[in-house]
Image (cartoon, rainbow, N blue to C red; front, top):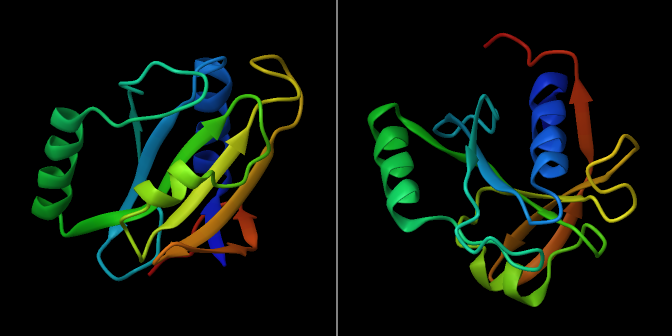
Length: 144
């Protein structure tokens, strides 16, 4: 199960709506081994596409160096789908190289960047196997 605080959930949804009709993407980092999504990092979709996302390699390397320095890891890897359901595509599955991460998909197909609900779903993707998991949105993450 993915447990995520309301502010981070809202920020991911806002990013997806703001970038529509292009796909949005980003990472939520957290302390290594904690499974706590604490620090949202919005990334630029280097592909600039409504059907594909790609992290800018320079930005991604800088983010990983920052996470290593802070003893963090990617807890959530997210992106949006602008015209399809919030389910990983074959391409998404192929890009899933963080076996410990939650892969969040937000579909903006119904309302685009207008007000209205989105589809927000989370998956584990390990060795090409996709498993949907429950998402629990809490007011704040509990103190550790």
